[in-house]
Image (cartoon, rainbow, N blue to C red; front, side, top):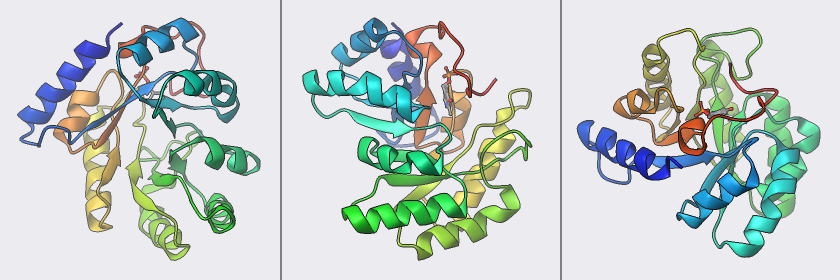
Length: 223
Ligand SMILES: *Cc1c(COP(=O)(O)O)cnc(C)c1O
């Protein structure tokens, strides 16, 4: 179980970047991992977890939430509008807001419930046709739209193309967040979280480096 190792690498990368301790939140990405591995990470004290499918999270987490306090769940995979209600009931943070229809649905649910998960807008920094996220040149306008709906937007998220150097993508996302007055940056995974921290990540999403390789590939995981 690599949790301790990842925590210490995050602390070192944060200090090396001249950023204060605690500036980076670790999201342990538990998608597809067997329950015994998730339980071991919970027992070691981790409380912030990422899942990429609403349905998988809905079956996996209630039993753990009955046994462990203060678990925070982050949705890091695409969200279909017809699953939005279930998602807002279960997740504390949604990293994948990427289109107007989903924004208006989340706004309606927020009005109805009097509360909303904290939100990140996903940006498709590599403009990959198959990937979710707003295109880079549409991001500023979409951020304004989300804000106009009164939603609690805190930052931007990206998944760089698997074959690219991630650094320019992280830098682009950081610049975009800065010019929009957003302080949250959800970027960096097992292979590149230290680079992301150097470029300002506030939330890193680390799966296999903590839990071990995923036994079964998640259907919509990045390659
Ligand atoms: C699976 C996934 C991760 C974690 O990937 P690892 O390479 O296992 O760390 C991070 N972000 C998203 C959006 C994912 O789907």
